[in-house]
Length: 207
Image (cartoon, rainbow, N blue to C red; front, side, top):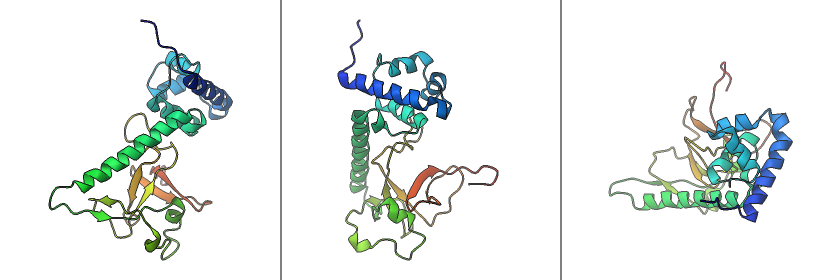
């Protein structure tokens, strides 16, 4: 059966991706082979994505974004929008499940705050006014009273396999819980007022 041709939008995605790949491969020290390893496919499949032979999907677009250290929107606005809708649907679905919790299940509400407020959390007594926060999602997780929700920004924590945190998904942060290596943590960057969301790795005693 003859392969269905790509749409003009998909061809534009491939063109933007190829231009981005060629512009950054030297600085990042990557090749089609290394990208293929990240995607879990053969080098020929990567070549077909870059040359508009096979269309991108959310999964492999997320892998390309991770390797290139760029948001999916930089080469595929449509897939970035699709991923955001998936994350929004996931968040809504999670909240709906909480609303349908079994009798006797205790759910607590925590404020959904900005990343800047999260970055200022430990520097001030009250980095945000609770009375100003309109969105208070619930969770059955027994977190401390100081816990809060954050909405994931960007594609850096989106993974084609394993645990993934797509853009738009909300995460519950408990700032009083002691982090251990391997945990996903929210931390403030030294030279930035905003917080960042990463996996905690300790290398030779340095976090």
